[in-house]
Image (cartoon, rainbow, N blue to C red; front, side):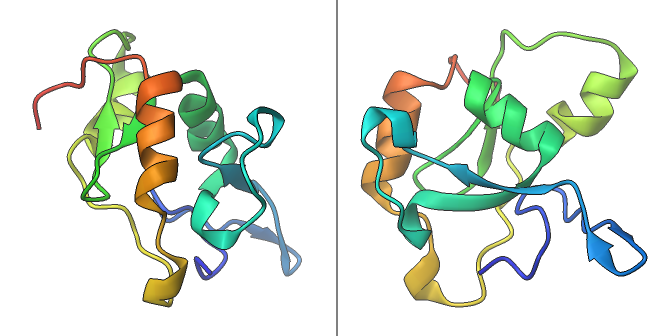
Length: 119
């Protein structure tokens, strides 16, 4: 659905033609009864997947990346995470695969460590 690239940064690394570092991320976690449907998933690079699962980053209802005010670090944190704050998510190929509002709402309430930084 995301053309084999991270929906946040666009990473699409390949080694000898084999994709690596891209993972399927559940928005509403599977272990908390989140369904296995495309609308409950994102293609994310390993770093953004971990940050999403830990609540350092999330999504707004309008599909913009939000970054927690509590996320701190030096230049690499700013380069790889903070700079995406307010950026529109790279959408899926088809609108029917866009992340569902109820999944985003679940993630905001249960995972994201807000408040969000100002865009």
